[in-house]
Image 1 (cartoon, rainbow, N blue to C red):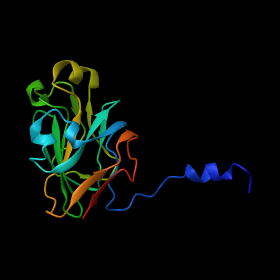
Image 2 (cartoon, rainbow, N blue to C red; image 1 turned 90 degrees about the vertical axis):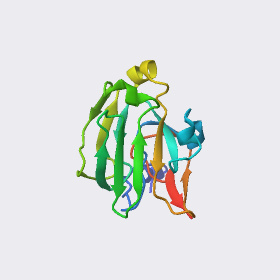
Image 3 (cartoon, rainbow, N blue to C red; image 1 turned 45 degrees about the horizontal axis):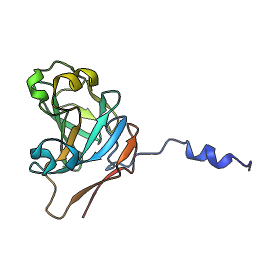
Image 4 (tube, helix red, strand yellow; image 1 turned 60 degrees about the horizontal axis):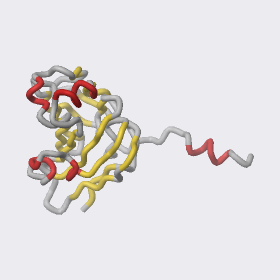
Length: 167
């Protein structure tokens, strides 16, 4: 075994467990309280986390089904294979953009795997035309004893072990 062989083993693809939650974008994971909208930051719709995308590409955080894509393309609802419901809301006050700045790759009823492309948002356009590009990700049907835990900071899309649901 060579002196640097340990580096090679760290670069292997990690198999994603069926119920794993992966990071939905390249950028930064944030606490939900950082969303400048009380409906999200005060967890009125449920617990979750926030993300600030550097490239605007949003991928599915779970294996599951697309439940709905908002007509204005600013949000998508998913249900994991084990029944967890997730709302990904891109930016704040982006419903007012009437779909401009978003490209959607899925439709209601589509089956997705963790890491599949969902929506591409034009980060520059959103920053200039909406309240913020910080995007809440809400788990809308957690049980009373379940909490979302997030390891905040810089993140790569499809990264594992950064977002989890605990009791």
